[in-house]
Amino acid sequence: MSAFTDSELNDFLNRMLEAERAGARSLVAFMDDWPRHGTEWQTLRRVHEDEAHNCALIGEQLKRRGRDYSHATGEFYAKAVAIKGGRERIGFLVRGLKWAIREFEQALPRIADPEVKKLFAGMRERHARSAAACESVALPQ
Image: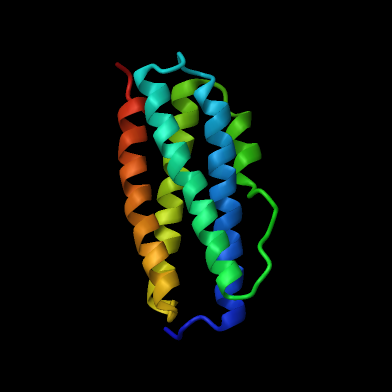
Protein backbone atom coordinates (compact mmCIF):
# COMPACT_ATOMS: atom_id res chain seq x y z
CA MET A 1 0.00 0.00 0.00
CA SER A 2 1.48 3.32 -1.03
CA ALA A 3 1.81 6.38 1.17
CA PHE A 4 -0.82 9.10 1.01
CA THR A 5 0.01 11.92 -1.37
CA ASP A 6 -0.05 15.38 0.25
CA SER A 7 -3.49 15.95 -1.22
CA GLU A 8 -4.82 12.60 0.02
CA LEU A 9 -3.45 13.22 3.50
CA ASN A 10 -5.02 16.69 3.63
CA ASP A 11 -8.34 15.20 2.49
CA PHE A 12 -8.08 12.51 5.18
CA LEU A 13 -7.29 15.11 7.85
CA ASN A 14 -10.31 17.19 6.85
CA ARG A 15 -12.61 14.16 6.66
CA MET A 16 -11.56 13.10 10.14
CA LEU A 17 -11.92 16.68 11.41
CA GLU A 18 -15.51 16.74 10.15
CA ALA A 19 -16.17 13.37 11.79
CA GLU A 20 -14.66 14.46 15.12
CA ARG A 21 -16.68 17.67 15.02
CA ALA A 22 -19.85 15.62 14.41
CA GLY A 23 -18.99 13.43 17.39
CA ALA A 24 -18.32 16.40 19.65
CA ARG A 25 -21.56 18.14 18.66
CA SER A 26 -23.55 14.92 19.12
CA LEU A 27 -22.14 14.44 22.59
CA VAL A 28 -23.35 17.89 23.67
CA ALA A 29 -26.88 16.84 22.69
CA PHE A 30 -26.50 13.37 24.24
CA MET A 31 -25.40 14.76 27.60
CA ASP A 32 -28.86 16.33 27.97
CA ASP A 33 -30.31 12.79 28.11
CA TRP A 34 -28.68 12.21 31.50
CA PRO A 35 -28.78 13.92 34.91
CA ARG A 36 -26.17 16.68 34.98
CA HIS A 37 -23.00 15.55 36.75
CA GLY A 38 -24.33 11.98 37.06
CA THR A 39 -22.08 9.05 36.18
CA GLU A 40 -23.31 8.79 32.58
CA TRP A 41 -23.12 12.55 32.03
CA GLN A 42 -19.56 12.68 33.38
CA THR A 43 -18.52 9.79 31.11
CA LEU A 44 -20.00 11.53 28.06
CA ARG A 45 -18.38 14.81 29.10
CA ARG A 46 -14.93 13.16 29.14
CA VAL A 47 -15.56 11.65 25.71
CA HIS A 48 -16.72 15.06 24.47
CA GLU A 49 -13.52 16.66 25.76
CA ASP A 50 -11.48 14.09 23.83
CA GLU A 51 -13.46 14.68 20.63
CA ALA A 52 -13.14 18.46 20.91
CA HIS A 53 -9.41 18.14 21.67
CA ASN A 54 -9.00 15.89 18.62
CA CYS A 55 -10.59 18.60 16.46
CA ALA A 56 -8.02 21.10 17.71
CA LEU A 57 -5.14 18.67 17.12
CA ILE A 58 -6.24 17.92 13.56
CA GLY A 59 -6.67 21.63 12.88
CA GLU A 60 -3.13 22.25 14.14
CA GLN A 61 -1.76 19.64 11.73
CA LEU A 62 -3.61 21.19 8.80
CA LYS A 63 -2.23 24.63 9.74
CA ARG A 64 1.28 23.20 10.11
CA ARG A 65 0.92 21.74 6.62
CA GLY A 66 -0.22 25.15 5.29
CA ARG A 67 -3.70 23.88 4.45
CA ASP A 68 -7.14 25.29 5.14
CA TYR A 69 -9.35 23.22 7.36
CA SER A 70 -12.95 22.31 6.79
CA HIS A 71 -15.66 24.02 8.82
CA ALA A 72 -18.23 21.35 7.95
CA THR A 73 -19.74 18.89 10.38
CA GLY A 74 -19.82 15.25 9.31
CA GLU A 75 -23.08 13.50 8.44
CA PHE A 76 -22.85 11.46 11.67
CA TYR A 77 -24.28 14.41 13.62
CA ALA A 78 -27.68 14.53 11.88
CA LYS A 79 -28.03 10.76 12.09
CA ALA A 80 -27.02 10.70 15.77
CA VAL A 81 -29.38 13.40 17.01
CA ALA A 82 -32.30 11.81 15.12
CA ILE A 83 -32.01 8.71 17.33
CA LYS A 84 -34.33 8.60 20.32
CA GLY A 85 -33.33 7.22 23.69
CA GLY A 86 -30.18 7.82 25.69
CA ARG A 87 -28.83 4.28 25.54
CA GLU A 88 -29.68 3.95 21.84
CA ARG A 89 -27.83 7.18 21.11
CA ILE A 90 -24.78 5.98 23.00
CA GLY A 91 -24.88 2.68 21.11
CA PHE A 92 -24.80 4.66 17.86
CA LEU A 93 -21.90 6.74 19.21
CA VAL A 94 -19.97 3.55 20.01
CA ARG A 95 -20.45 2.38 16.42
CA GLY A 96 -19.15 5.77 15.24
CA LEU A 97 -16.09 5.55 17.49
CA LYS A 98 -15.34 2.05 16.20
CA TRP A 99 -15.74 3.27 12.61
CA ALA A 100 -13.14 5.97 13.32
CA ILE A 101 -10.77 3.40 14.83
CA ARG A 102 -11.03 1.33 11.63
CA GLU A 103 -10.38 4.45 9.53
CA PHE A 104 -7.27 5.28 11.60
CA GLU A 105 -5.98 1.72 11.38
CA GLN A 106 -6.40 1.66 7.60
CA ALA A 107 -4.73 5.05 7.21
CA LEU A 108 -1.79 4.68 9.61
CA PRO A 109 0.38 2.55 7.28
CA ARG A 110 -0.12 5.16 4.54
CA ILE A 111 0.84 8.21 6.66
CA ALA A 112 4.48 9.19 6.10
CA ASP A 113 4.39 12.39 8.18
CA PRO A 114 5.55 11.31 11.67
CA GLU A 115 3.57 14.03 13.49
CA VAL A 116 0.33 13.09 11.74
CA LYS A 117 1.03 9.39 12.30
CA LYS A 118 1.54 10.04 16.02
CA LEU A 119 -1.69 12.08 16.13
CA PHE A 120 -3.81 9.29 14.67
CA ALA A 121 -2.14 6.57 16.73
CA GLY A 122 -3.07 8.58 19.83
CA MET A 123 -6.58 9.20 18.54
CA ARG A 124 -7.01 5.47 17.94
CA GLU A 125 -6.16 4.81 21.61
CA ARG A 126 -8.46 7.59 22.87
CA HIS A 127 -11.31 6.32 20.70
CA ALA A 128 -10.85 2.77 22.00
CA ARG A 129 -10.97 4.09 25.58
CA SER A 130 -14.02 6.23 24.76
CA ALA A 131 -15.84 3.33 23.11
CA ALA A 132 -15.27 1.12 26.17
CA ALA A 133 -16.47 3.90 28.50
CA CYS A 134 -19.58 4.48 26.38
CA GLU A 135 -20.34 0.76 26.21
CA SER A 136 -20.39 0.69 30.02
CA VAL A 137 -22.95 3.53 29.99
CA ALA A 138 -25.07 1.98 27.23
CA LEU A 139 -25.52 -1.32 29.07
CA PRO A 140 -28.79 -1.49 31.00
CA GLN A 141 -28.19 -1.19 34.71
